Image 1 (cartoon, one colour):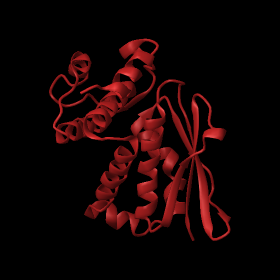
Image 2 (cartoon, rainbow, N blue to C red):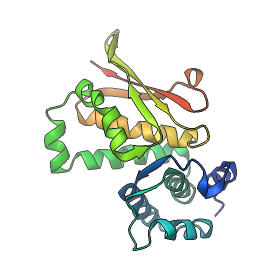
Image 3 (tube, one colour):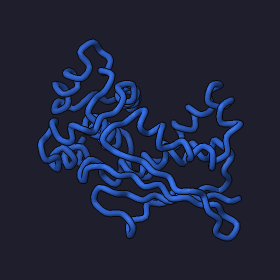
Length: 205
């Protein structure tokens, strides 16, 4: 099966596995992503095997791992398991909502509004990632809808549009878990540029 997205991403990296070394993500995120790869009945591509082994010497990821490795594995999941980016993004959303339905998260999110949730988004981002920044604006009203804009700043080339939208879907799922109705997520291409992506979230107030 051709892995178009994976190989296009690897070829775009300026220094291969050493690219964007300042950008790291918690190791447990990689472990969960590899479990997802197994669920689509696939195994890591041979070009990723040595790289993965260096980050998972005991079968579990180190505390912090390169985010480019996580991104590469994610793109292999799209290539191997989903006919389109849209179907992949729907699954990202579904899986995140399932996480928020667990007893621990359900009890927490019952007492949070979308506004309160996004106020802490920047700190939660820092707890799981280094080398990039997420800033969520205050919610405003436009007619009957509430809306906000999230700005993600990162080294140009770290993320593809597929990655950006999947990160947005994780926020989207969290907002819905707080009771948002008829919510929508949009990548504001006209307001984005290399190294800075703007995503708009809105819901019916």
